[in-house]
Length: 257
View 1 (cartoon, helix red, strand yellow):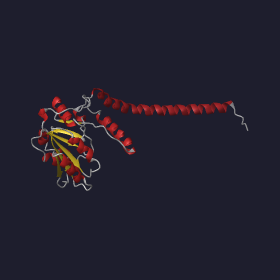
View 2: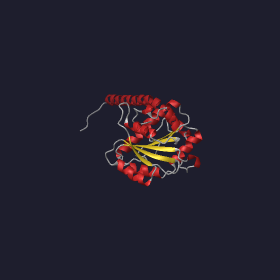
View 3: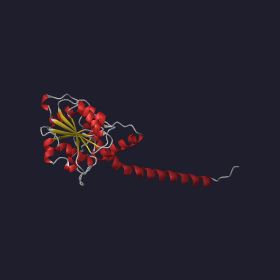
View 4: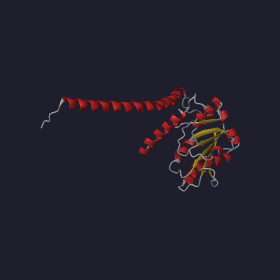
């Protein structure tokens, strides 16, 4: 059935539709304008990445690196992840004096795994940290224990996470980069291996948040107060740690960044 419609009715409907479109466009424009400062800030953070330092390439140790590095690996129930880390560290050459695995009373067989690895590589040594003080969190406390038990002859302390997979030539490349630039500290932004759906969603968002706040890793134009260090792979001159009383300044830090 057809209903008669007057020209005035059509005109009113057309005007209402036009008004709705205009209102929607105005709201969209306002929302876009409100996002411009955030976009500008993000671009300002990203642009220095074009001048960032190139990724480190693995290299061979040189004679002056002999026995200069003590590696500290904090562990707590890492039996399912520690194997590739210890295997990768054992592949490092004479620049590594010792590999100290500081275990925080694991219950999953982590100490047994370390003992098996130590039988193959005498540089690997298992330590158990003391009870956790009330003003420390676990990871920096384990790093502190490793530092305090490391050989005084080592010039560098490398803290590295148990779930990392060190490539051959990693430690030598870190020491070479620190010496070439006269750095007291070098940390790396590793390549993440993501397997679970949750990791695939969460990790990129986390990294973008860090870039938004601090800028890209390795940027040369980043002011000192925005420089970020990554505790997953953290090489520090021993003399600096002595001066700073080890990792005490990060004793309440869960992420060591």
